[in-house]
Image (cartoon, rainbow, N blue to C red; front, top):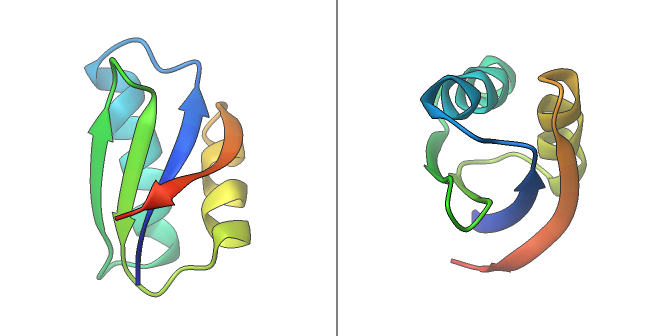
Length: 70
């Protein structure tokens, strides 16, 4: 399953790595792409939106919900 999510508070490569690492910790097979400028995180994996939300919030960022299907 592939989906895009709105995430606010990311400002740098370190933020992107934090979000990516938090999501991959939930599903090591997930592929994650972060678009800092747009505030979008694309996740290709078997994670539910709720699990992605938990990972993003655990990393210290604000989860804004589903942005669009990828």
